[in-house]
Amino acid sequence: MDMTSLFKLDFVLLSGFLCGLAAAEPKWYTTSDGRRFLIDKEEKYNWFRASHECGRRNLQLLEIDSNEKNVLLMEEVLEKADIGDAYLWIGAIDEFSSSSNRDFYWTSSGRKMNFTHWMDGEPSTSDEHCVIMHGTCHNFLWDDRGCTSNWGFICEERYLDVGCKKDCKEEKNEAIKKYSELFISLLDDCSEFE
Ligand SMILES: [Ca+2]
Image 1: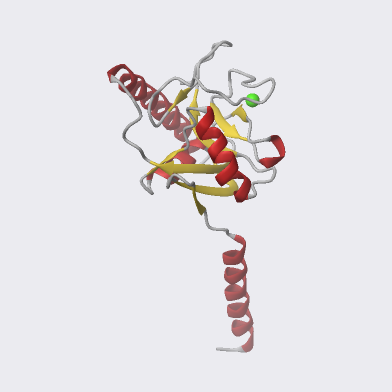
Image 2: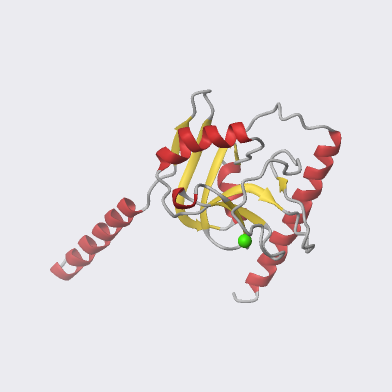
């Protein structure tokens, strides 16, 4: 191998090493009641991919169904995670409704969102169907965003006892069907550029 090839090899190895340093791994956090949460602050996931990143680890995008859980999360997870001004996807969508007075649902349980922690003026526009949580700088308030924009995510361990009744399961199945259809239509749109 000549010197030029050696320099090229060194450059490739060094680049790989530096990229490895730059790519932060998602981090685990545990609350005092033993529940575990996974946070990736890197803003490179659309909502569907964020949901997939949780699912492939047998986790789910975060559901916050009570003030108690929200306070526990803020005090024992989010403050420690040093999120700064990053945004994190959570597991809520509006079932792709175009109504200005639309409801939001938790995709993990299928339940309608009752407890909310919206930022002032949010949810804002009916073409923003997925929900992010703001970082520390905005007190972890929620905001609807376009599902294909890229943000970080927060997952939690799956839990079975969510008080979900039959109707709730039907809502969940309907929501999954709707966002699967949207995902497929987005893939079709992307294929036009290939
Ligand atoms: Ca919004």
